[in-house]
Image (cartoon, rainbow, N blue to C red; front, top):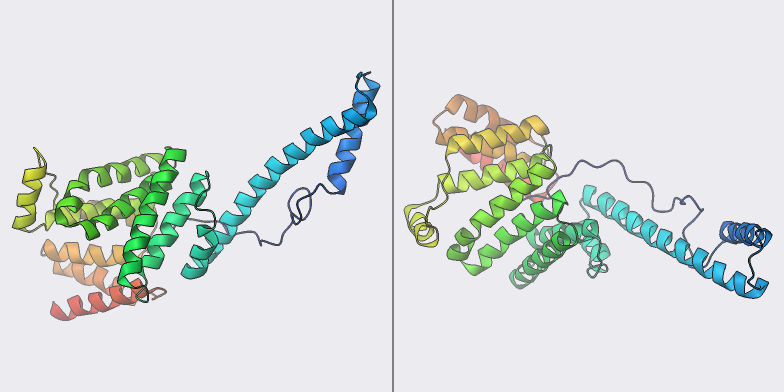
Length: 303
């Protein structure tokens, strides 16, 4: 699966200063000390009984502690801006190196982005099989931690569902099917939190498509795992793929491909040709886009 897109505003350059000026250095700057002086004067005028020395130390501690919190907040925002820029530029390895430094963060926004970056790195053809497995589990752990920090973060739910599905590839079909209900629940929760996210809608479409074409032996496994095994239809999958396209037209080459494949399953060759042609002509920005073009061309030649 490609790097799943998010709607992002253009990031502010990382060198741009914040509301207190450039964010380089760790100590208080001129603006901070001026503010401290103003606080000192006002407080002395109100007749506080503290000595000038002890008061200065006390207020300096309060003020600098406050600025430290603001600085930490700015730091997270800056990292996110840099990460989103690298993601949009397709700099997968640089993005991972940036975010892995913050794997112990308590910020859900950083953590789900690290989960995404870990997964994207695992998807590269240059990544070894052993490394792919390691990254898959790292990504799942980051997504899980993001959910623990903020259950209301739609992207954390989305990437937890994606990463849980990926881990199933290493643990066998029984585990993958067993996780299916949980995966769909997280996708549905993500849509509840952000109804306009086209990629999550697409992922539910993929979920439906997978169960609609599930072979008999996998259905038998599902029947042993669930009292009522999960099922779906190609019509239901088609509904979600179209819904995703309505939310964000032409957002993802794979959505175009699956619209074509689903219409083929439904024996509607006219519509299949339309969407497969769009998938074939989609600009190839990633390895996955190239794979989509290849598969679309093969299917077009087979019709």
